[in-house]
Amino acid sequence: MSGFLSGYTGDGAKTVLPARAKAKLDMRLVADQDPFKVYEALRGFLDANGFEDIETELLGAQYPSWTSSDAPIAGVVAEAFEELYGQEPVI
Image 1 (cartoon, rainbow, N blue to C red):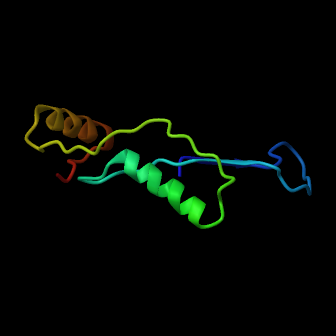
Image 2 (cartoon, rainbow, N blue to C red):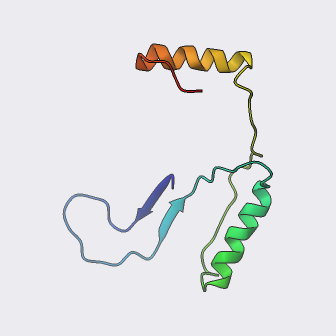
């Protein structure tokens, strides 16, 4: 989950129930998953479980990808990791 917001968030206490809530989800896909089918599956799950009133919006979709550890960019990322954390990454 990327974030969740609901109810009173200011200083002090309030004992009111919120009328709205908002959640932002980030789904990490694996090989052969279609982001549009995953989104539709989420919508179908919500509808099948009585949450037809929840509004959803697909903000972006990216198909899963894989980069070889031999690719030049992998070396750059490994060097940056080692510089930042002071240890070699496990590849």
